[in-house]
Length: 284
Length: 278
Image (cartoon, rainbow over all chains, first blue to last red; front, side, top):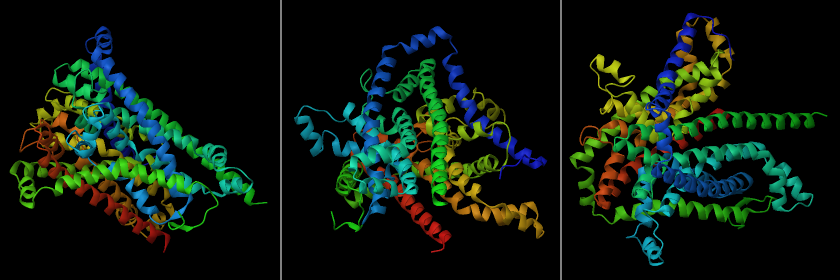
């Protein structure tokens, strides 16, 4: 399908695409780092070691480190459930998981505030136990789990559906336990896709803004994650500081893109290999 | 759980994976959603209607809808162009272009908002050129539209790309041999086959734009009645501790996005069934 462009209108289309990419994507990236370094390296260093910045980095890491394993586990369970069994409500289950993708993050934050806030039954019970859910770390983790829960499942479901379950069935019939079948048969087949799901979940968990801003309460030095710090410093007219925090997040985004490209290639490559092996086996 | 199963599988673990998945979905997704629904249902109809038809709410509906529609329109064109160029031609930088398309999904929305507002400010790298011809972008509805189209750009590209890759060239060749001009081949043959994917991608971009918050609030200027989007108004009502008004407004966004989500999935499954010939 790929051809070398020959006619002038083909070159025109390519140039137009490059212009769109340059204006929409490359210029913003360049601007972030230009602004962050506009007052020199010393200023960047000062911003990076600012207590607010260090606190925000730490909080962002804590939220992400809790969110990613939770959604990894849930994503595997859900994907296993909807791709390995036929049951009533299978379609519904895989539709419900898409809801966080379609919802406005602010609305998501609001839902959690209404259900788990101090005025609610649940929130009230927890504050009786001395645990504050909203405007504190637990609430921020909860909304981040909500916002990022579809990624792992969405990556795994189509792959596991296309791979089928004959090999797992063979393992079970040969006497393997369910865990052994999963660990030694399924896991090696889905490892790249799993990693891909983790990369996507991680990027969104680090960068979530709307939902977290609703439930964080924006308490300086306590409940500010990196994206919230970007907004706070921007409002304080600390433009260089805001762009330094933004630069950290943009660097994470670039690493994400790189990993994503590599992992997509690896997933495709390993599934191509699998189909090749299969056709070799099928033709005696 | 033999009642649920419609076909037996030799693989163990159904009860465990099913029970935990349902529990998770209930706790994380369904309980918060129904909490909002209960909160809204406690309002009287007159109260609810009063919040929704408040002039400031109506203005924010208008701004959000128009900007999201404009952004989806831009993305339908730019997205189709990018998908076309990436799948059809071989040229240096193609892989880089393909990878960069996903940048808006990887870049945190607050970073996108901060950067776009600086880029399109009156003295910004791009804003100065617009200012020279008398157009202000930052702190106007135009800025909102640009922020929305940035964050939802990948949807159209990624929806159209696989379909474009699967198109067989013989149909186009047949059209050309039968005397169709390149333009006619494109609109009558290629575009006709791409339409379902293009519409799906655009609808997804529209859904995302309706709910976009982080990228927009930096560039919007947030003037009530002029550049205030619905998500921001929800947040302002929350800051005023007016949970009832916030929930009522949120229910409007929520219903709109759920209808769009289920509508897109319904249309998609219909179309795939038709393609498979069932």
